[in-house]
Amino acid sequence: MIEAGDFVEAARDLGFQRYTGVPCSFLTPFINYVINDESLNYVSSSNEGDAIATAAGAAMGGERSIAMMQNSGLGNAVSPITSLSYVFRIPMIIITTHRGAPGITDEPQHELMGQITGEMFDTMRIPWETFPVEKADIAPALKRACEFMEKEQRPYGFIMQKGTISAHELKNNSLVATKNTDIEKKIFNKNNVPLLSRNEALKKIIEHTPVENSVVIATTGFTGRELFAIDDRKNQLYMVGSMGCASSLGLGLALARPDLQVVVVEGDGAALMRMGNFATLGSYGGDNLTHIILDNEVHDSTGAQATVANNVKFAEIAAACGYAVTYQGNDIELIEQLFNCKKQAGAKFGHLKISAGAIENLPRPDVTPVEVLQRLMQHIDTSF
Image (cartoon, rainbow, N blue to C red; front, side):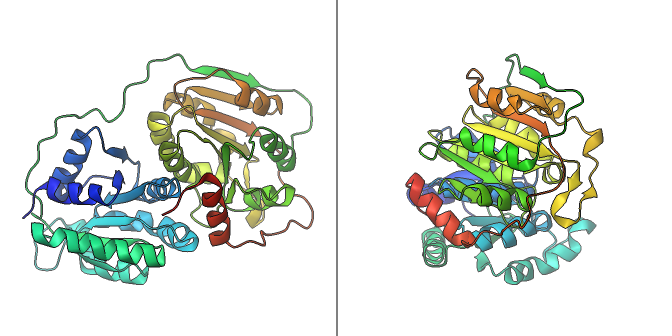
């Protein structure tokens, strides 16, 4: 058995100060230690997939990151592990607990995952080892992880057994300050006018995201492809796969790089997929994070099947989750005002209704995801 600080301080010496995750009782002492230390950074994610994406965003911003979760949460994390961190080659340490380990009595829901936890890592091509149980084993284990991540730029896993870490009291249970500021809410609607196209909205966003000090993260599908078609700039990232994770990726980058304006652009389908992350962004997001939903009420890139967005008041949800600014409407003026509103102590949110459809002969990016990320990181002067 080790003390929580034995691992955390050894990891700190190697540059790991950003932690994201969803708690497990096996992880309790570890998480408590991180939360108690104000010089470390912890994001309490709404689910394990968002924890992976937030850690990935922080890594893009130059912060070595660790994502923590119960092994049952690996199911929630498969998409961002396989189609975000793997495809873009974003390294991080992933610590998962081993609930339901063979030969250990546990709750019935852990039986199958307990049997296949290691196989899950293997299938996702993540090398892993048992989390160290002796202090002397910590530094060598972290060295192996770092050497792999530096060489392959992919995640490295640790599987933690029950009773690995001795108890550690939680002294600071407030992760973020409660936001009591008045929320700036505005509605920008025009009656009896055609809805804007995605192309028009993206062009306006480009006008307000200068290459020098901003980053634009575009959700997977037509949004990223159309942004690329308009202007392939080095401050843009085009998501592929990991649908719904653009906002959590943007949060991680915004936290790591408060000097940058980070703008996340996603569709209604992506937002619906991970609405729990609204609460995380509302709680942790600073004034350098802008979250925009271009809502055409369909899954455009798969044949325009309807979403349920016509019944969802995204801006009201964002306001309830703690965003400092929430705008909604169908007028392009929404974008203009969103980027020019007075500075507030929190993230900004815009919900813009647009028309379905895309430009003719919509191209796919002719740069690979790895090339796009490397170009962006070179531009913002970060490295893994």
